[in-house]
Amino acid sequence: MADFSAAEIEAGRLLFAGAWDFISAAGGLDSVPPMSVPEIAFAGRSNVGKSSLINALTGRRALARTSNTPGRTQQLIFFGGPDRLVLVDMPGYGYAAAAKSKVAAWTDLIHDYLRGRATLARVYVLIDARHGLKDVDATILDTLGKAAVSHEIVLTKCDQVEEAALAARVDEVKAAVRKRPAVFPDLIATSARTGAGIDLLRAAVARLLAERGARSNDIRGHRS
Ligand code: GDP
Image (cartoon, rainbow, N blue to C red):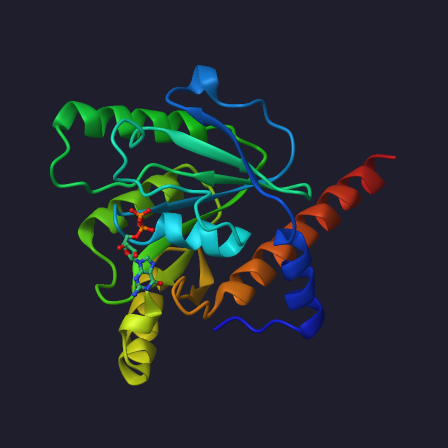
């Protein structure tokens, strides 16, 4: 798993410390906020623990509501933090009860959002540690790969799996995504319940933003 220095862990803590708030909910591209600061997005099957993870990252117990809340399953939800970072809660997918038309609307929204969102630094694809990768996850990984959006796997609910089984699950998921060059090769195992891995995920985001910042400085440097 990813290795982070104490300084990176601290940078991650600082990045997420302070007040996080709801910015807006977008049901279509016309209502997506204009691009400004870097964004990281969270995707996953309904019930994977996405709301719980966002709440754990931000230290706000009820910032993200469960994706089962009626009426908001097709929306992208934007949260703003104290620093220059926006979190995007993508609608949960693979909801068995969803009508075909709803699935199509979901797909359109996601495609529209992913297309040309230059501020989107990475999509974290959440996978339930108890279940591993499912067909529907493979579909979203295909979509992200085609959109050339940087993405990485985060295991959720790791408290529900014993240590040896978790290690086997990590290996299995890593092996499955190795065939997908667009997936970031590290994966982060978390539990919103115990807080395990939350500091690592924050550190990963801090590192990502630092790398992006360095890159854009480079570009500016070369231009001048
Ligand atoms: P979402 O639909 O992906 O937003 O998932 P939620 O965050 O609403 O979580 C779905 C269910 O999983 C809820 O009953 C949560 O209490 C439970 N859950 C979420 N995260 C964890 C976790 O880290 N460990 C355990 N044991 N349960 C979790």
